[in-house]
Length: 378
Ligand SMILES: *Cc1c(COP(=O)(O)O)cnc(C)c1O
Image (cartoon, rainbow, N blue to C red; front, side):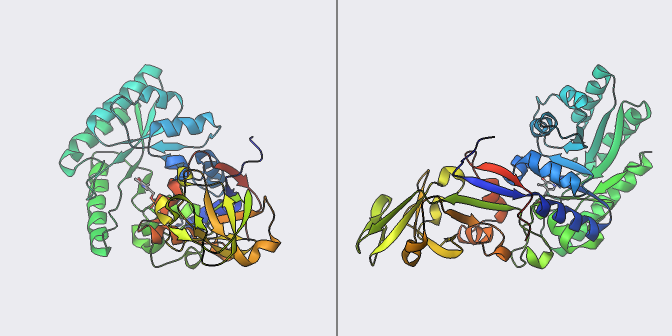
């Protein structure tokens, strides 16, 4: 492992285990934990392992490539993926025992061909569109897809483990309409002679708000990382613990007189004499450049201090003013983490950037070392 990294995302394994166990306790069914996009920036393999330890039944990714990378990283539990390019090699999926979300007949035939080629059944979850209008089979195609699935299941070519759909989070009425559509799909699959073990519709938002949408499994991403899918509810209010602490360190301290311009464009000018601390994290690491001048803050020596001046590709500056005498080079700077531990919540950045916490964590860059930690549970 690289050591001495000056850009670190500490990932609390106890927090992930706790969050997954919390979802299990809430739902009572199977929990599928989504680790797409590098585990929402937390590290896919780190998250997958902790999620399995917390009681996850299946680990999920969007792409087959991500699923195969998890196998290579030593994850041996069930893995599902559902977003396929037209050239994705389902033979690789068969060999690595990856479960496939299947949205249409051509994908089903590719899965069957891979099963025959490698002489082993391929496990699938049928994906149906119930109103989101993304992937998933359209209602008019269900009967043909289900009939062919039944044929392939009867010959042992395909094993059908589940049926699933994804909500648009467009309000309670829209959720109910999608659930009714999903019920219809399940009934028509059963009528075709296929009994799915797992029916899954809810992602984090519905899992945490709508017990009537739990079915026999839920598929959570953001909740497993301890973040809230709701603008008006915090992690703590949901019984979740944020797993990521994004930190760096002070690599230079500079006393400056009043009137000193800071960083590109001098859009910050120090009003009084103060001390500036240089932190080697920038927009290439996922720190939005547009946070500049927005009032965003970090914690240094346990105290909140403002980010000043433009954020560069590799570095930014904080005004450490009154703390200066207590600081040394190498002191940690926390950009965000669990507010219950005194750190700025990631939602400060997502709020200032008019986006969602998902986008901030998923954008943490490749130079940031993800470090699995056993010790950051409060
Ligand atoms: C990303 C994703 C999820 C997880 O969503 P969260 O809101 O993070 O829980 C679940 N299902 C599908 C199909 C997804 O693409």
